Every structure is written in C-alpha cells, then in structure tokens.
Image 1: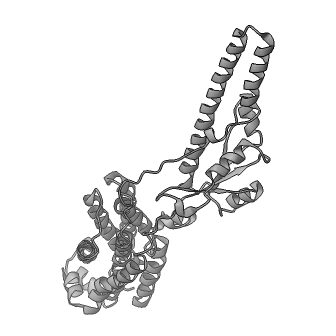
Image 2: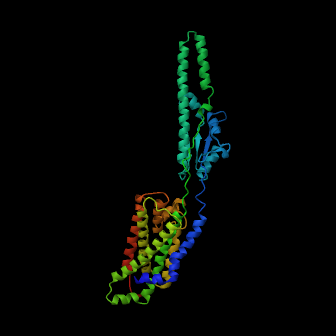
Image 3: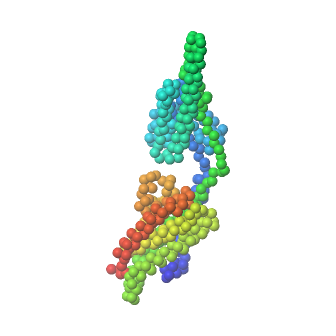
Length: 404
C-alpha cells in the first residue's frame, strides 16, 4: 500500500504511466485512422502456354478486365500475363501472389475428350489470393466440363441420327458435318466464365484503436513496472529492506509486498486504459470481454514479476534504470507494441513468441480484431502464466535485502 500511495502522490510517475501513453495513442490512432478504410480490389492473374487460336486464350480474353471503372464493388480484376517466365519469376520473388496456368494442350485435351488440367502457381504467403484463384479455376473447370458433356451428348445424337438414315452417303455427310462443327472449332462464347458479385451491406473498417490501445497498454504497463526496479534497488542500497528484515519482517513478506505493490499500480493503469478506450475511442472488447480482462491482469502479473527479477539482477540504481529502459524499448517493438504483429514478417512473429509482449498482443488481436472467442486467447494466457512463474522463481532465488 505504501508503494501505491507514493505512486499516487508522484506527479511525474503518474504522467509517465498514464498521461504520456495516451499522447502516443492519440498520435498513432490519428496516423492509422485511414489505413483500414481502403478496400483494395483483388487482382487475379491468368497465364496460358497455348499458342494463338487456343481456347484458353479466348477464355482469358473474355475474362480480362478491359475497363476497371465498370467493375462492381468487390468484383475482382482479371489480368492477362502474356509471358509465363516473367509471371513465374514474380511469384518466386514474392512480387506476385500467384496465377492460374492453362497448359499448352488445353484445347486439344478438350477436343479429344481426355480433358485438361489447370495449374495454380501460388506464393505460399498469399493466404488471401489462394482461395480466389482456387474458386476461379474451379469455375472454369466446371464450365468446360459442362460444355464437354454437351458435346458428347450431341455427338451421340448425331451418330444415332446417321445410323437411322436410310441413305448411307447422306448419313456419312451429315455425321461428318456435325462432328467437324463440334471438334473443328470450339464455341467459346458458350463457355464464357461469368461471376456474379453480390454486395451485402457495407464493409466495416477496423477501429485502429482496437490494436493501438492494447499495444501501448502492454508496453507502458511493462515499462512502468520495470521502472520500479530502480526504486527497489534504491531501497536496498539505503538499507530500507534490511531494516524491514531486522524488524522481524520475513523475507517472503518483503518480496510479496514489492510484487503486489507493482500489481496494484498496474491494475490502476489498465483500468484507466480500458476506461478511456471504451468511452473516448469506442474500442470493442470482442465476443469475450472476460478474456480481455483476464489477459490484461496476466500482463500486469508478468510485468510485476519481471520488475522484481530485474531488481535482483541490477547492482546499482543507475544500472537498474538503464536495464529497465533498455529491455522495455527492445521488447516493445519485438512484441508488436509499436505496430500490429500480424502484419510483420513471419520471422518477426516467431521472435515475438519469446517475449511476453508478443503473446499478450497476439491474444488481444485475436479477441479484439479477429473476433476470436475465449479459447483463442488461451495459448497467450498460458504463455504469460509461464513467463510469470519463471520470473518469480528467478527473483525469489536471487532476492537479497542488503547491498553487499
């Protein structure tokens, strides 16, 4: 309680822990306010290995977007990439999500009846484009299959009509005429692929505050707790902790008092953060607000445990201050406090798993941005619990009340 009382009367500490973070939130919320309002049109690329006159070229020409202004909202833009090698190189260099490839025997396969297999060349990181390419390829395959079925049916009827004709010469002439019409040239317009786009309501943009505020909550709750390591080292150097021990206060009680003092300050911070966030920035807690609250509490626990551990590692007040600031500024960007972790490269997302910040931000994003339920934050909760236990064990093993 004494730690909380000193915190409440220290204007500089209150400004750094509460007012200062909201200056960042106001700035970044303003900068990111327009970033989620753009509905980028999906671009789908088509490539063929057939020479001129092939059915695939006519299909692609029919699908190719000639005038983008005439597209309906949400309708994809089709692009014809004329050179296979260039398109493949772009995919390999991660400059192109992927494309649908028509093989060189596409027309022949359809004419001869053994079919043709479309290929999808995809960038493994293109998670948004892959389903669309699969859907378009499936639609083309379905249309070609229906056309082939119709041809087979007409061919059968032509054969039957020729066999039923009493004049053999006329029957042969009739059969050859029908068959040449079916196989000699392909009725492409009947195989045109059309897509209907239905708009259901307006696209709702994500409130930037849903990931800005949790990120800075994690950063500044951790930073405030880490800064408390300097105060703990100061009390150890001026022998305050040693005098408490002499006055029959147990070592465990001193350690617990320091820990819960930091927890109390952290709880004040998160109450203010979430209160301002909901009333001023209208953030949404998602379908499981209790998970957001529990995750916030666990972040306070792990940051308080880290502060105690940090105090046991620092020998002087100056070193404690440097270690607190350094670790806070390093772990914050690595853990996704400065930018949404889900937009960073996979390598950085992997590194974030070794920080409590990364797990906390991932949990908050799952709940508040992606609409996850309680179970989506359970891995983050378990990870934060594991960090807390590890920090507390190390702190209890190294905790000392004397400066020597």
